[in-house]
Length: 321
Image (tube, rainbow, N blue to C red):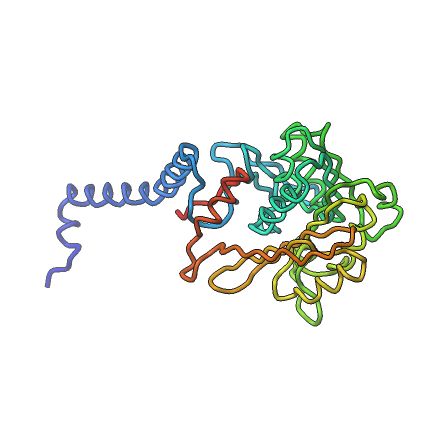
């Protein structure tokens, strides 16, 4: 009985052709992903509108040298942010998302003449940098407790040559000594506090993700308390949080004496996902300006309204490859 490979064993020419086909197949498997990334990158650069697929950017600049790891040894990526700017982020750590874009946009619109932003719990700087990119002459003060995040924020500031416009402070916003110099100094303050109460949950092993997602250094109340002290009389405080905790957020704002002027509820797949609130120290008898935005439709597709916001902020979106 003959076997399928007998012909190949008897024919060196057939064997060589099999090896060549296999080698070509392996090369295709190796270079096809790179080719697809290149095509998506070229399309993104040539397009006048943001690519409508995938999550907010989060893919590294092609052809750029790999960034050095953090002082603690964690790998770092350089991701596209907005208007030609990039941001250093920890690979496998907390990465910026659509809530950061919405928060920066609401802050920019709420106080269009503000020339100095205080960003509380700044992380690696996405919210403050999104805002700063819209205001070429403005300044940013960023307060962040995590050493690793402030290290990367400082690295990004250096890369973008923003040192004259950006001040980064490492410290806990609950520290009155740290916050005292900011008393009544800012026309606009932003905050994207952790969304989750720890409870009996198992916390993430990654320290950056642990502090970014869980209220280990305070939640809506602590962030609002720090903000109200830093605001001028007519200043605006803008905070984003998950819609499922709107009652907690409303209570925290009221407890520190802030009045909600505007609430933008962002929907995804038919469910409320985020709420961005614009607040003021000044009393107001006006009803809250309630607005809604659909980020993804029922099928999960990005909407034209979301595309328009990304285009307005100069934000990139990650193509589906």
